[in-house]
Length: 267
Ligand SMILES: Cc1cc2nc3c(=O)[nH]c(=O)nc-3n(C[C@H](O)[C@H](O)[C@H](O)COP(=O)(O)O)c2cc1C
Figure 1 (cartoon, protein in one colour):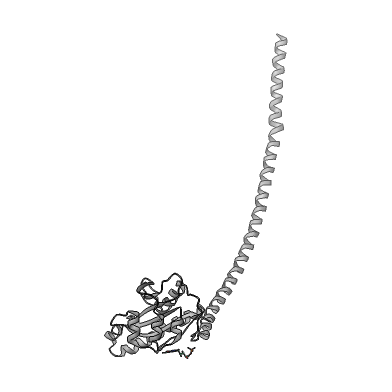
Figure 2 (cartoon, rainbow, N blue to C red; figure 1 turned 60 degrees about the vertical axis):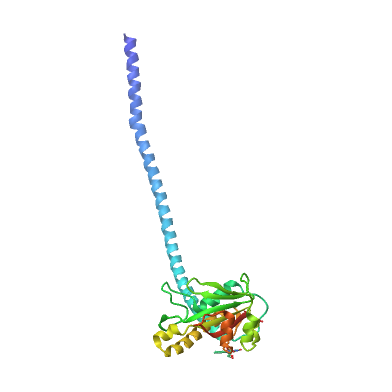
């Protein structure tokens, strides 16, 4: 009995000892370690935050610098744009001698677009027009253009495309109708500008004729400047026989030719 009592007491003693060690010895040390770990984590986070703040400040400074640089570049671009128009005006010259090199179709379309291209949804064009009545029609006598068969084409401003009027190279006959001027024969193309007077005179009476003549100058000048920008040579020709030119082109009865403009690569 005594031995059994001693044994139970020993077990109880041992359990109490284990519990005491557990509560009085371990618990505080676990809590200290946790605190230290959290504190270390917090310090790390603070350091990270400080680093990020520095990086943000640096990024903000760079953004300010970039904005200033962008402002400078915008001013330079505006200056170059102005200068380039002035440069084109300075460089434009009547050129009558061309190489045998072909034009590209893209160049031809750019010239036509400059003359009468549509620039707004309503249908306003690159050149001004009295009452926005647009009396001008543009034709191309193509002879030497990549990916465009020789022929006479009409420019359709609405679709910015060409419609074939006549097949075959008409440059020689157009040159003959232009008092034999060789530049008409030698140009890779000739742009022929015609006018339908009644579109304008129906509203403005005989004064409308003056408006039509002013307008052909606007369109031709646009073509001149575009050719200069594309490094192509051209000359605006007024000396030709109207009836012969109209027939060569295949113009309708109400169209009158006003300008023949040979264009080619500068010799
Ligand atoms: C209405 C008009 C008709 C012209 N007709 C011809 C012409 O038939 N043949 C020609 O070689 N040049 C013609 N020209 C081009 C002028 O001869 C040329 O513009 C002028 O000599 C000035 O040279 P620039 O264009 O190089 O400034 C004509 C120019 C205009 C404005």
